[in-house]
Amino acid sequence: MNQQHYDVLIIGAGVSGIGMACHLKRECPGKRFAILERRQSLGGTWDLFRYPGIRSDSDMFTFGYNFRPWTGGKVLADGASIKRYVAETAKENDVEKHIRYSVAVKTAEWSSADKCWTVTAENEQTGDQETYTANFLVGCTGYYNYDQGYKPDFPGESDFKGQVVHPQHWPENLDYTGKKVVVIGSGATAITLVPTMAENAAHVTMLQRSPTYLMPLPSTDKITLAMQKVLPARTAYRLTRARNISISRFLFERSRKSPKAMRRLFLSIIKRQLNGKADMRHFSPDYNPWDQRLCVVKDGDLFEAIKAGTASIKTDHIECFTKTGIRLKSGEELEADIIVPATGLDIQMLGGIKPRVDGREVVLKDKVIYKNVMLEGMPNAGMIFGYTNISWTLKADIASEYLCRLINHMDRKGYEVAVPRDTENSGGDETILGSLDAGYIKRAEDRLPRQGTHGPWKASQDYLTDVKILRFEPIEDGYLEFDGQRSLAGQPQSTGFLRPLRSALFGS
Image (tube, rainbow, N blue to C red; front, side, top):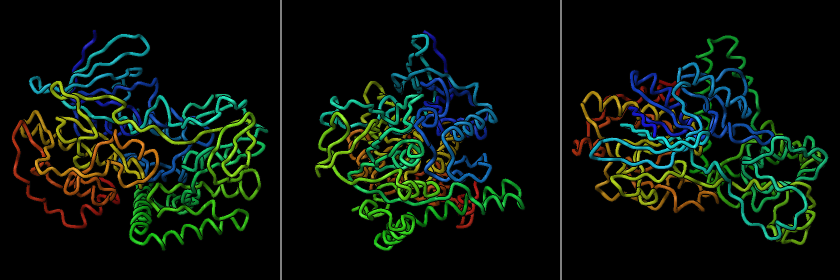
């Protein structure tokens, strides 16, 4: 059995894992680390999903890493471009050699006696069992099951004579030219698939139980392209990034504070886009903006397909599948050659690993998060978990920076073990994703860590607040225990208002 020791062990080589590795190289030089990746390539989500039109649903100027500008004028990039960007980032920062591919982590156990994590894994190419030990463990596995997405058991599905294709397992050479397609769902995947498939299919119907808030966004940023002609590339990137962060924060905060006004705004935008070619009831959700994620429509392509008659929307419930399609509860039947259940993700934390501390399993639903980066009671362990209301990577960057700060602080003070302790019983009812009300989150409430009601146990969805906390507030805050001892709360550093604001908008 092969055994190797590292200072830091990163699980997952997706956007978060590569970002964490790059921050380690930059901020903790000399640390020995490895990235364990089950797949045979890096990229995570952007390597897994291959369905037509796969793209970001966040603008790339905020989705890109803060230390490596996203160049060009593309706002919403395709999946292949994003994977290439992540790969180039790994290469430029010399982290490629640290990735161990085809390594599926099975267990992770902390020993207080040894003051380290022991990780067992299987090399899925050779079948060999491998053991790794590490002083610090960082989970960068995202929040869903890569093996399977969520799909309800539809009545009569076995009767359907056509193809049923889940977006998470898209066949490489699926030919839908001239075919009738029904896409079940109204989330980001469906919003992307429908107009893309409508370019070649006979007709595509988006079948939804309830509408989603939509926002058209141009795929090219003309203002950024103009700035890039007259300003240095990094300056143009920082200015665009700052503007887009501000716009995203404004839309989210106004949606929370003035939901009725923002609902009118969103629906009026959609109404102008449709120009009377579709019934607005298919675009009028029964919840407030940002109770669920806002879906971006690239160049308004979904609205264009609907106006052209190549795509349509039905709002109804499924009674059953039939030999030739789907029968709705209204009695209408939708003919289909291909049915695509874009019905969501199967939530899974830490890649399905069930960590143990001194022989006892860590039950995630019983744990409260600390600064949305660590878990109460788990020593020397971080978890990179991005935002749900703005670009994932904005949080991934500053969470990685915080973990590097923590590791460097421990080195300076000679500490070996850091563990968050909730002595005030701060746990609340909301999960780590509690700000969203989507079905895939509700289905996973028994698998997700909790957030607290106050202090560092409360999950923030505010980037400027998190920058202040993770970049500038003292590491020894009275909640972290070091080598079995709790420090008094540190004195806040005098950063003033402008420093964190400037750092948040323009990067470190």
